[in-house]
Each structure stands twice: as structure tokens, then as C-alpha cells.
Image 1 (cartoon, rainbow, N blue to C red):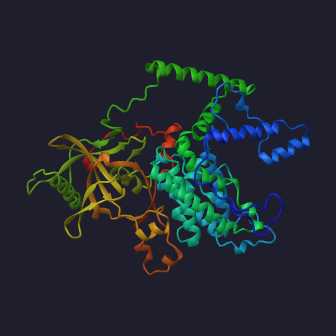
Image 2 (image 1 turned 120 degrees about the vertical axis):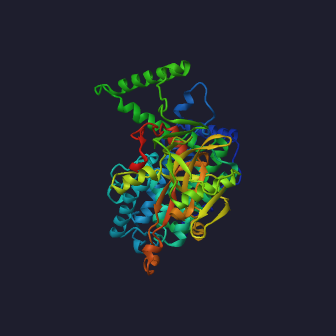
Image 3 (image 1 turned 45 degrees about the vertical axis):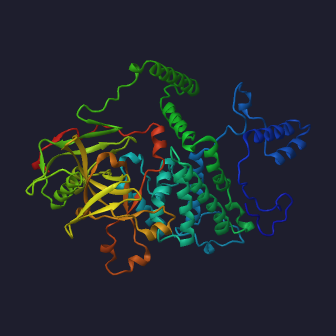
Length: 544
């Protein structure tokens, strides 16, 4: 932490604090804690206790000290990423962007270049963008963020903050927030999205730690600026960020022990209260009943609730399952782009085809993924949207690294791209196809372009902006290349872009990627999309 200029008060005139390179051993930390605790507990007077409490930061022994067996204190207490990242930090940064932070008389809000959403008109327009983006969020994203201009002070949920702040804001602040502050914000998003993963490669932990350290250092330089009248900008949540990555090395990914699961359990158990005269007794009994049921189901799996998949589905193994609706018969591919995409795929797999070969397939509408998401297809979502139906798109997917072959209608040739990153695509439909090795399941997709490299660099590789190519980028892929359902949200025009002639048409196909933050955490908290639904039917080809 950087000391404020001119701060000569006793106890506050120390040098700047710099985090040590290596974390102390837990036994050393525990010994120091026990020594400080003994120092506080041995106080003989209230005045002495008050002074020692201030010196050590310890008020009293922890209630956990009374447990017969416990890991050493204070190292057994991991960081609570749920409240830190989705409530504390979001509140701080949004207050900056809106210009609602407390302002001392010696400061001036008009001199806050980061307050890009300060104007009521701009804030309400921003809220409308968030509200309209609900259409593009798959149902697996759970509760979509409501209009923050109307609801941010009315019980905005942690899930809403997480999707809004780490999903939408990188796109909706592009071209709105000044470049130094936008890049700084993206460092926070970059580090957090890595640290809330279920499994984190060591190299990514180092990258996240570097980004979060830079964020904290730059935060003090850009916002606090060593000004004593802005010292209140530097909340505890800012400096807690520098400990997240070291904690992951010590305890494992924070998503494994964060508050989401417990909060979900508390919500479930309190909704079961039936006796409001003695609610705590009632909830204790219900919790005891639930633990007994869980124990019985663990010992005798036959007691578990039957969550069998639909009988009409097809198990593809590895956690994938093909779900209806489907064609009753075979569907003949008439679109030239799809014909060429399938022909190209077959040729690439050394399958001979006749010059007059007319491809036909049986289309399926949905696919269940190993991560618990259900992806859909344009075949079924398109007509619903055309009728004005309320449909949250789930046909946009992330495709794993691989060689792909894409047919470009413009030049009638096939270009092979070696991908160094994941690609994003719109699923047209899924289909069964007889290969020499047996019956396989594929997806007809339309690939988005690779992310804009200039925007990628300017956003610390957080904002992935891709263009939709429609029928010009049809390709056939194995369904097991699909990693997740994502949202592809239209990227708003910046002020400079809006001034360009024909900008609406030029930028109409530009979308930014929103992956569900903490998807693994959502599944651990009890969320998974149901595989049953209203589409367990066969569809006549002529009706489509």
C-alpha cells in the first residue's frame, strides 16, 4: 500500500507496503498468531486490552479454538471469494464508474475521469443495454442481471453482479471508459476469471497473480493517487486481491471452498421452514433430516432421487447426450453451404463420395454437455424468435482447439485453419451420420471470425469481439468438440464509430463473447440444467 503524501500521523508514517515474494510457512504464521493472542488475553486492564488489540488486530480467541481437532489458526480460514469478488469489489468499482463514491470537500467529482457513467442519461442507457442483453444469455447462465439503473439497489443478487460485472461490463464499457481505466478494469476481470475456475493450471495462477498485483498497484496510482482525501478509496477488498493467488497455491482453487454452496444450502433450508413460532428449532430439525437422508442415499444409492435422462435421448458417453426434438425422417440438405460443408468433412476423413451425392441427415435440436449445460440450435430457436417468442439463446457454443475445415461460399474453396485458441460458433442443428467406424453425431455450425486482435490487446485479452459470418462459414464438427454454451452479445458502437458513415451496417455483425463466470461453481452449488423439456417430440420436415 502506498502511503498518502503529507501523512505524518504517528502509526501512519511508515514506508509503502510491498507484498513479500514468498508466502510464510503456515507454522510460522500460526506461532506468531498464538503469541499475539496470548499478549492480548493477558491484558490486566481494559485500557491495556484496548491498546494491545489495536497493536495486534486481535480482539479475542476464535470460537474455533474450542474444537478438539482443527487445522492451525489463522491459516485454516480461506478467502471467501463469493462476497469479495461479487459484492465488495463490484460495489467499489461501480461506485467509481458512477461517480457516487464519497467526495471530500478538497476533492471534486468533476475531476474524476473514471466516472464514465455519472450522467443519469448515460447510466439509464447503460442499464437498458444490460436489460436487452438477457435475450443472448443461455438459460444455463441462471438468473440474468436485471437493469442496474433500476434494480441495483433493490436486492441485486450475487449471481447478477457476477454476470453483469465480469461478463457484460468489458463489452459495455468498451469505448465508454477512458483507455487507461478500461485497461486497468480488464486486469481485474482477467485475474478474477482465472481464479474462480474449478481447476487452475499453475501457469494461469502466475498470470492471474501478476494481473491482480498490477491492478492493485495501478488502482492506487489512478484512483487514490496518494491523496489523503481519497484514502477511503482504498478499501480492504482491494488489498485482499493480492492474497488470492498465493492462497490458491496453499489451499487449492478458491471455488472449492467459497461461500456459494453454503449460501445455496442456507437458502434451501430456510425455504423449508414450516413453523414460524420456533424457526430456529424447525430449521435445525430440517437440517438434521436432510443430513440423515444424504447419509442414507450415500450408503444405499437406490434411495437417491431418480434423475434418469429422457428415454428418447441418446447417450454419447463422456457426459454428452443428444436430446430431442428431431426429424421424423431424413432431411435433405438443400443449402449449398451445408452441402459443401458436409462434402468437405467427408473428403477430409478419406470417405469417397459420388459427384452427384445428395447429402441427407436426421436433425436433432439439443445437446447436453458434461458441464451440465444444454445447447440448442438455430433449427428450433430461429422460428421461435421469428414469431417474437421469449427465447434465451443457447445455440452459441465454444469449440475446443482443433483443425477445422470451413467452406467459404464466396470463392468456392476450402480453407483449413489451425486454431491456437478456442473458436465460437452458432449451431444450426445436430445430426446422426453413418461413418465407416460406426454411427457418429456431428453438428452443423457457422463459425464466428477469430477475435479482433486490436481489441484483444487493448482489453488485456478479456474482450473477445468476433464477427458473425452466417452461411459463409458453415462447417461440420464432432459434437464432442463443443466445450460450453456461451453468449454472443452485440457490441455497442463507440462514439467515434457511431460517427462513421454506414456504421450501423458495418458493425451489425460484431458480437462479444460472454462465458458464464464460475460455471463450475454454479454446478457445485446445485445448479444443472434439466434434460427434460418441451421439445421431446419428432418434427415433420415439411413443417420446418
